[in-house]
Amino acid sequence: MITREDYDQFPDVVVDFLNYMSAIRNKSQATISEYAMDLRTFFRFLKQERHMVPADTEFDDIDIRDIDDDFIRSVSLADAYAFLSYCKDERHNSATTRARKVSTLRAFFKYCTVQKHILEKNPMQELDTPKLKHTLPKYLTLDESVDLLEVAAEGPNKERDFAIITLFLNCGMRLSELVSLNYTDIRDDHTIRITGKGNKERTIYLNDACMRAINNYMRVRPVDGVKDKEALFLSSRLQRISPKTVQHIVTTDLEKAGLKGYSVHKLRHTAATLMYQYGNVDILQLKEILGHENVGTTQIYTHVVNDELKAATDANPLNAEKIKKKVRDDMRHREDQEQKLLAEQQHEEQKNDPQPPES
Image 1 (cartoon, rainbow, N blue to C red):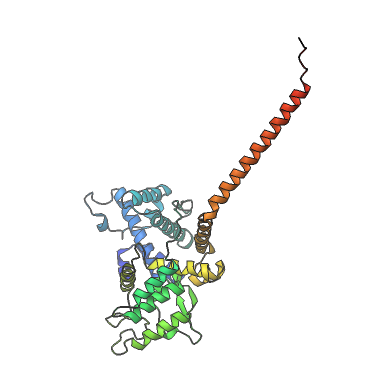
Image 2: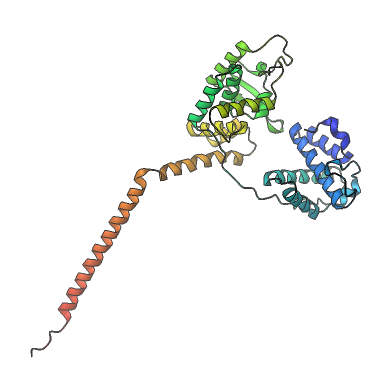
């Protein structure tokens, strides 16, 4: 992750942009870091394409500190599409990653146009986003979630690990939100205020299962020698637990439970889906619980449930038999009607035909 200590690697205009997005737009440090990495890659690509560095220069060694206002004015929409093509073909970036880079370029060049007045017209205003493949989120079933909790309740750090898994599955927290929790932030009404993406705060309600798990962990949580005294979850080094450690805990427990192809974030999907399936939670309530900015992001969980309902209906063993019986009945009815009409037609023909003369 890029921090302020790395800003000396960037041109002034990029540093100004990063400071603006942090201080004024209130973007998180993770988002600021992504902006910085995307712009560094973009300007390195342009310098390489324009032969502004020796041909044998390693891409990661290209210095972008000399990027100035004139260089920024020279950037075109075609440059952006060439960059996105490079990201796809050479760096093998997914459509989602390239969409993020589009967002970065739009934000930076808008800043250069509106705030810095370097540009009279934003060249990225018409920059399109790569078409994204919308896939339904993968999640654990209720039984699989119980299996995971049972595995987490074993081992040398069972109280801590069980509490971590319980919070993920009951509250739908993000990984960054969980590791930043302080036990001092838990209120008497069993709520806790957390900071999510974009530094947006929201209130999480801790149900009985969460409170029991937290209380059991607090009884064995180290007290002496703790470096981050207010941190809820501690590592073996008596400091705030890191995202990497939590990922290892979850991955290990998933493997022990025989659940493959899942990750920490899939537990967030699981919490959301189970709440929607079993908790009588409407889509707007779920949006607030998950901390989504747009209800369209939350809408995907209704699609999961609707698809399951359709699949369950289609799988009904009576389904095929009902269709077959209806088809058979319809065919018999049509055949009976046709036979009846044919008999009536023949009767009419016989009645109307003149009798042949006697010989």
